[in-house]
Image (tube, rainbow, N blue to C red; front, side, top):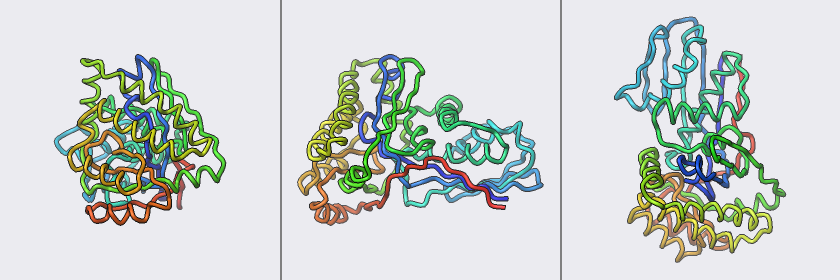
Length: 336
């Protein structure tokens, strides 16, 4: 038997950062999220042994099922360990687990949440555990945030579990709610046609950057920018529904400025130069994705100007990424 589970990543269009506590817990956060079809895939093959063989990030590890897995300096596999530890008492036999991502890099896409969600999906299918999509997303968040001590919000896990174009609401307190953005197919296609995404060629640890943001929330009244980001979500939704994509591009430019003010480590000289170059060649707005620093960026650009924009970007040694929206979220199949 082979269980194949996959979960999408996302473009956090507007509102990223407001889903992080303590801001979300105290004031409520809101994020406009676009799930995309760049997925982490988990393949799980149970066997009759007591051995656990795991392959991910281009490396392999072997464990004994009878052991409890401690988190160690072998950090590449700590996320896998956290999922296995959670289900450990219910796992009857050994297994082979492979986790992979088809693109060259995943930084900024909510990739750890995609990987965690896909692994949870594989184990719940194997063990006949009935988790809802929301329960799966919140478990993925808990394992990353509480078990491993990574500093994250909840938007990535929700996008991975639900897919789609959604407004996510967080708090005040621990409340979470989801509103699907009900758009006509023509509007969805037009929104996609305005987006250009590329990979800068470098990666970074998003948890470290989010940690800086959380410290600013606690010790500095940088909340003005986060409240402005919340307001931009409502405006962005209205502009998408009315098809005013030119104005949406300008709003996204303001969003980028507020993102940088809320956490200056989100950018650097190279990212600023790339952003400036893009605006000179047709883009109206955009931003680094996720916590920032490196990884993936997107630009919002009229379709008729994108050929020149892509030509210019390629000269800067970045990789333009092809993608589509994902409306399925977590999906699991079993092959006998």
